[in-house]
View (tube, rainbow, N blue to C red):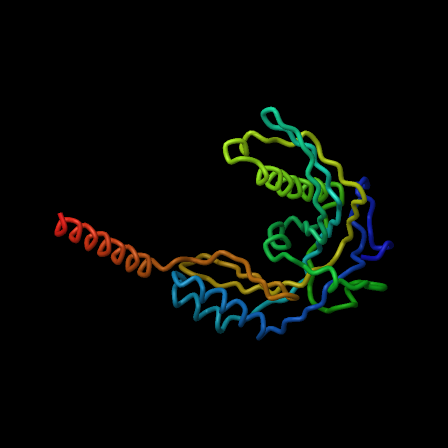
Length: 243
């Protein structure tokens, strides 16, 4: 992450033009293959939905995102205990476009080594559409810190006895050497309609990681329920027979 691409966290002005971007490594066929493999692991998905996913077009776009890096130092306390936990965070994404709030995190990680500087006018660097960067760095930092603090308290609790973990709380967190850079992240999107509702599958255009919510087949759920009932009946019958 180059120094001239970094933005001071204290600033609360409109986001600057992105000066970093990750390239599309996956082709459309690669992205579809990743989506179908992901669907294959979710066998309750209706076959009609999978069939749509095989044939419907994919859309490629860039999601503007703030990429945070920081060394976080947290002080915590619990019943009769106090301590410090430190963690390094790198390439933590927060969407700069509220319309795509969940995408950067759900498709993480975004390897820092894939980010490259963009010189001149960003739209000319790639003809694919991109979202609007309307979230400033100060608001994005608030969201990033919430996620960092979630990981910090989880790490602190993991080192304590189970009965003490829920009683631990953070006293304060410092973020020395924190930086943020506005980057364009590549995303493939596959939109399919099932029973009148649209469902989106998103694919990280660099790594192939897939995220989304898909419908479940009522027929397949009924088959699973019937199989479970049959198994329980068999177990009950065997228990009675052995009694």
